Length: 139
Image (cartoon, rainbow, N blue to C red; front, side, top):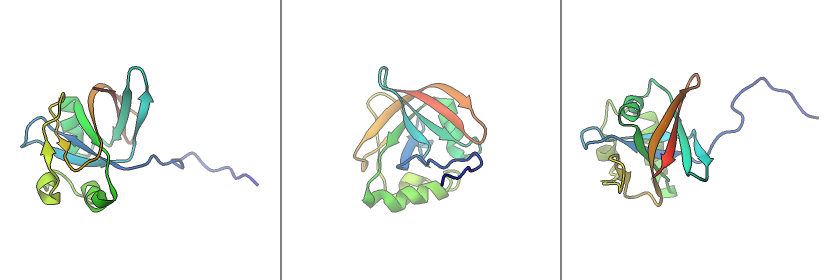
């Protein structure tokens, strides 16, 4: 028998990714994001959704670019740690031992240990409620 539930987030996006942001090494930060996905094939577009109160939010909004770094089993602990620790308190690259590398197009770094890194430029930010969606072109 089917049940009717109140509206909620019963379909959770997976997997969690590490989003790297910042235009200079002093500003570089990592944020764990699970609200992430594909929006369009042609042109290639994706999104991340971030709470405005998160430390990385202003870095993302100011620079309008970021890198989505897929994670591995070996990166699970640091991915989790980056999701519960704030960049205002820690240099997450130093604390985790992950390596920031110069991206090909955007100024935000990519994570060398990640098997796949997707460089993104923000096209539009939509305020949705608890999160703002950064609609982005994959560059």
